[in-house]
Length: 234
Image (cartoon, rainbow, N blue to C red; front, side, top):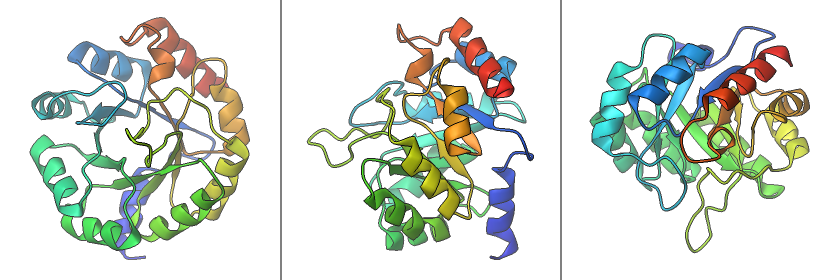
């Protein structure tokens, strides 16, 4: 691996014994500040999606990305289907990393890596809905700076590209994590009360939470504190 991809992956890898947190579906400056104050290492900013929570405009994403302090990376969630569209979305929003929510084939993932700025990590989502998820993750791994394992149904009539609040098969997620050379992010139905168990079961570098902290839609600060406490204590 050349120094560039190694450096991008290294930035996404927490110190030994730690698990980092991405608070997703951040919609405004108050939620961004709450995530920063709680100690999150990243926030997820959701662009246009076919379904799911937290969608905000590209202008709002750009403003929040510019306001994110050092130490808390603003990550764009994009559902654009082509490498060219994804790269343009990154340029338009000024984020420091991109989460590719609509699965790409390996050729398109390779093309995306060519189009992105060299310093911008590409996080590829793999939906853990069957044994084929492992082969999909392994096919994407050469072009991914991290793989995010989530619950969803990308081939549904209305694609569900995350934010489902559903837990998937952690045993399969652990097998995928062990097979990958890049960092792994675990999402899908995480919340206070199960995140510690999830970390022990899967061993991810990161956990990613959205709906588990938003029973009424807005970010619940008490649940956020409970979530962070459980991650730190696991």
